Image 1 (cartoon, rainbow, N blue to C red):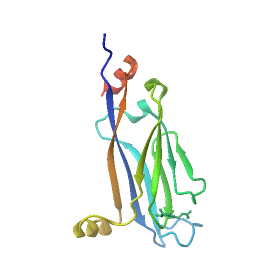
Image 2: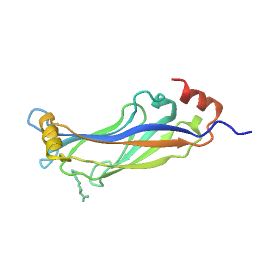
Image 3: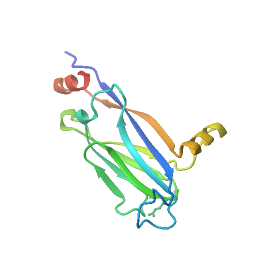
Image 4: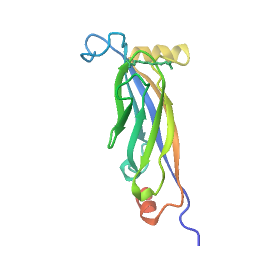
Length: 154
Ligand code: SLL
């Protein structure tokens, strides 16, 4: 007999960037860093609780960052840093044992500069925030009954 169907969960993978000013500049960072940023994996509103299925996220940054590999083992699954330029962040999602799923890779381009139409750019500048997000769909194959329950409970 067929088990439960595959179950998909959705997350936001994204980044936020803001200009560094004398007021918000963290002490001790390199002089050429112009921008603060954050890269994250977040639950979509209304989805199952992310902690049910996500165990750990590893973010691989540009190789000049020390260390270049950052790990978040609980919410918020994110890294906050400073820099001067965008680059591709490799993101490895490690799932809870209940999922029996192997880790999966995603990537996110760290967008530091305002982008889009002139109106979009003006709005991002006015807000002092550049946000770039995508919705990623993760599929769990043949979920066990306990996982199925956990993923569909809310
Ligand atoms: C590229 N886009 O792909 C460029 C790389 C790297 C940005 C940009 C500072 C790093 C640090 C920083 O912002 N690097 O201070 O370690 O070649």
